[in-house]
Length: 144
Ligand code: SF4
Ligand code: SF4
Image: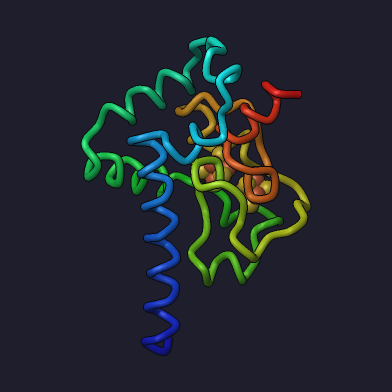
C-alpha cells in the first residue's frame, strides 16, 4: 500500500478513536447537544449506562486501550453490509464511533445482535453504521 494512503487510513482511525475517547472521558461532544430540559432527565441505569460511567472514570490511555479491545471483538467485517471501502478505511465499532464516515449508506442486514460487544456493553440498538452510535440512538429515542 502506498505510504500516503496508509498514513491517511491511520489518521482516520486515530481521529475516530480520539473523538470517541474524548466523548467517553469528558462527554462534552454529546452533552453540548443537550438542552436544560434534557440535562435534567434522569437516565435509568442499565448495563450500558454502568459501562459508560466506568469507562468515563478511566484515565485517557486506559480508554484507548479499552476501545482497542472492543474493536478487536467487533464482528462488522463479517457482516454483509460491511464493504471494501469500510475495510480500507479501517472502520468498525460503529456502536461507539457512530455512523460510517463515508463508506456505508444502506444496511443490507446487521449482525450486531450476535456480536460479543452487544452482550458485554448491554447495547439495545443495532445498524450503528447507518443509524449512529448506541448513545446517539438512545438520545434520539428519548426525545421522540
Ligand atoms: S455491536 Fe455491531 S458495531 Fe458494535 S462492535 Fe459489534 S458488530 Fe461492531
Ligand atoms: S453496524 Fe451492524 S449493519 Fe453495520 S456493518 Fe456492523 S454489523 Fe453490519
